[in-house]
Amino acid sequence: QVQLVESGGGLVQPGGSLRLSCAVSNIFFNSYDMRWYRQAPGKLRELVATITNGRESDHADSVKGRFTISRDNGKKMVYLQMSSLKPEDTAVYYCNAAVQGGINVFGWGQGTQVTVSS
Image 1 (cartoon, rainbow, N blue to C red):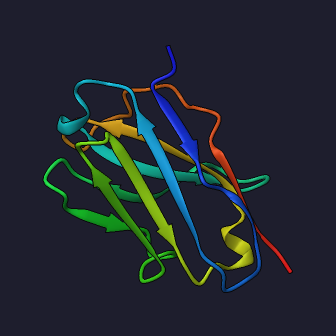
Image 2 (cartoon, helix red, strand yellow; image 1 turned 60 degrees about the vertical axis):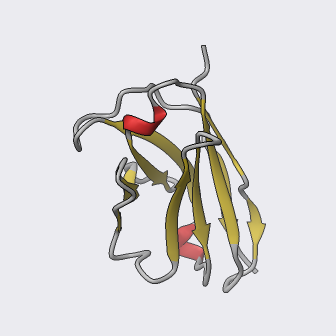
């Protein structure tokens, strides 16, 4: 049963913007902390942003001021608004969930590819 589906990626030029979406098919969505990760070619998966069930958010230093995580509990959706994109943002982006800042509770989905290139 697929519980996380990422979408919204694509090819953009440096300085461009994208909005990523993560649909969560789980009745406990409102209780989770939600996270966005990314994995660039040849590199480890890294945490990009987190938003708690209380809508407190945090972002990695590399994306702070450029990316914004948000959530819509009614739609069971998590978003990542990405602006001022750089080539180093190129990666597959994944979402996941946790309770009280703990380990991720779902397996990894397919992710959505973001490519920033001229």
